[in-house]
Amino acid sequence: MRLIFSTKVFIGLFLAIFISKTAFGQSVQITLGPDEIGENQTWTITVTAQNERLRSYDNFPEISGFRKRGQSTQSTTNIVNGQISSAQSVIMTYIPERQGTFTIPSFTMNVNGKAVNVPGKKVKVGAAIQQQRDPFKNFFDRSNDDFFDAGDTEFVDIKEDAFLALTTSKDEVYVGEGFNATLSFFVSQDNRAPLQFYELGKQLADILKKIKPVTCWEENFNIENIEGENVKINGKDYTQYKVYQASYFPLNAEPIEFQSVGLEMIKYKVAKNPSFFGQNRKEDFKKFYTKPKKIRVKELPPHPMRDAVAVGDYQLDERIRNTDLVTGQSAGYNFNVFGEGNISAIEKPPTHSNDRFEFYEPNIRQDITRQNNHVTGTKSFSYFMIPKEPGQYSLGDYFQWIFFNPKEGKYDTLKSRLTVYVTGESKRNEAIQSSDLGNFYDRIGGADNALKKVSDSRWQKWAFNVFILVMISASAYIVFRK
Image (tube, rainbow, N blue to C red; front, side, top):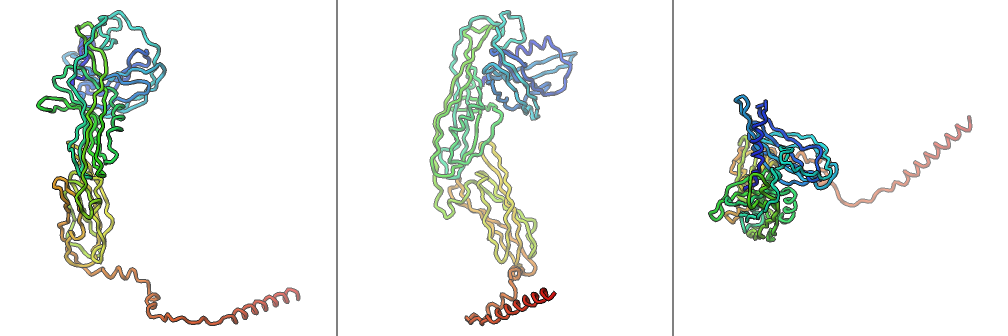
């Protein structure tokens, strides 16, 4: 994609003739623009890699009160006393939206894999500043488009050879089966129209609100840096710029419809008669639209567990430290499901304790990889079990997991193939003894349950009342006698 190589490359080489630097070590720095500008001027953030290639960098921050105008690159090479130093820079240009004092918040950018912290500052945007007419005054501060102003220039619109497309890996899926969706901007290798992304982060947020299906589970590939990839379409060479990619897993059989969405790009008009001493391009905008897309979703074949099984291409990796077990002693067992599909939707294999084994709830761990248009991973279930009866047992009788394989169009079962050998005394009765409620409850079965009349105990109440009355009278006699 011919995202503009500006005349700043030339300026950088031009400056190298006049400026000498004394430091030759590798370094990365981020430079903010001036503290005060006019309303008609631009403000910049510059990322510079000294004596190393600028391999990667984060998106430039959004700044309240400014809007991004575009991005350019610059490179310089210096030779001092036979020593060569170089610098590569990428410059984001911002345009103020109004006059006032704006706060640039502190931010962090990852450049070449290193985190660079940038302190904030305040920028004052004042009244428009009259442009200098002298082409040699403030020579090095002039922008690309004003470089050697040559007066009025006629600009023409060149037909672009580019398009925006939402592509999917499949047109028909089962409920729960994943498919990949990618929003990309394609530019032909033969394209001659200068194009550049414009406020991509803001536009993408609005686009995703329209295209994300609410009836699907999403696994987002989280594209951070947009890099071109060479592809062939109908035998023609294109550069593909992926701006969004995700895998979707339908939760029901409703068809999935992606509506048409638009992405606005900066498209420059070029001078009809370009010259070295003049403005050779003019900024303009064009919106590119995708075509609508529909995905058909099929119900799973009939099965007793159709509404509960996972869908994907899975395999089993099981592990146990020792197959020789002893009754009453706990043992660990890992049931690991791995493959391609919605890893987050995988449920534990059902287990039930009995008089031979006691099973505890497993510890669960999942690892998901989103790469090469596929979602793969592993979900591990770590069990603790206690054997209670000696003998030889196949763990396949206790650990089974059913899923639907969309590639083969049928249900399948992952079943343990391990056999354990249990020795020791039987612990089956220990469970019974631990629940023994005592001799009192043992006698309930032999007790007489015939109804009997309760004996009259009213004479006891009268005797107790008389005793209380005598005690009160004796106490009163002793008090009055004294």
